[in-house]
Image: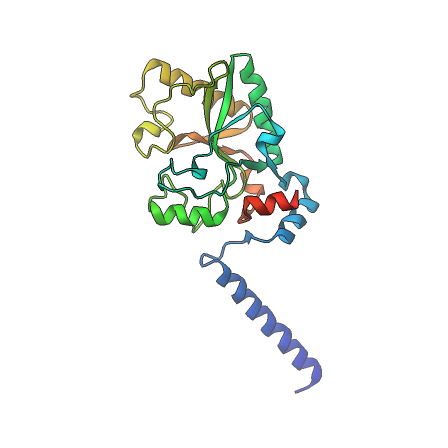
Length: 233
């Protein structure tokens, strides 16, 4: 075989092996950012891709990260610490929402934000229903850093406002247009949904607490831990 033809053959084989290896990394063929170098490259190309620590940027915001405790549907802590990260434009809008709510003596409490892909896989293993738990075949918008789970609080008492259900209630009561709530619950839910919508967030059709940022498609799936994000930033 001529040297040139041999080199071409080696190149083609390397592409085939490389593609096979990449696909083996995820059984569903998803492209997932799972290394610090990949993430740094994304940020260098577009600083909107940066995942920001929400509480550092908005110190007055309240966190109640349920997945850092056993008080969630899995019955165990799946995060090593109670942290909340989201993409830069998402956090900028959350800050604007927090400021707007102050005039009503209200504020935000966050249950969850960026979620590593591996955690979504674990969730689906526990609860095999893609209505409430994202299928690993597609990944979650939480994995993209472009979804937030949250509620409203009274700024003076720091208590949550009444809603039609608790967080992670996998029943009809969680549906944003559920009609069985009290007048107060329905009014509180309306304030939350409308305020979030003004700032580019769309409520998920099965969960009043889940909001997708309207540009979520521009952000890739991620599987970096909170500790990795800290090391980078």
